[in-house]
Image (cartoon, rainbow, N blue to C red; front, side):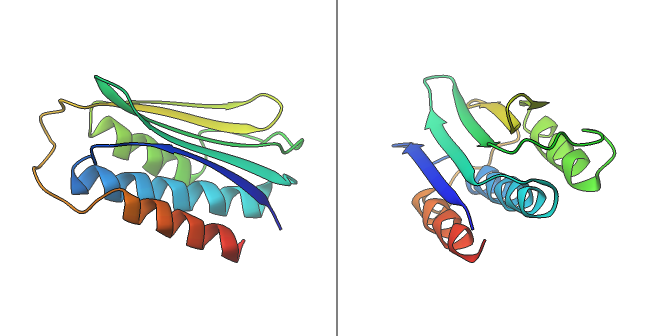
Length: 130
């Protein structure tokens, strides 16, 4: 069982394809924590800045992963973010941390999409099952 802290600060939802990307990454991050970490607390941050969106996922686990690049899940995260011309930084410092930024004016965005608030409720639902 985990304690999950959610910091959600997005007023204008990103395009739907970015929402799906973030949802897939968050799901994979929770899965990785459940499988590979001894964490008891998870912090999830979703923020909107004037020129980019930010996603931060971190746990407080003390077990360092063997590798950050060998897992398919982490490689998929990297590829997804790069498709939006974003950056992803995966580290282990007092826990596993994934820090993502995606520019708001990325050419691959498509207009429209559902509110990211549904992502917030989906994330909350995922947290209950861990």
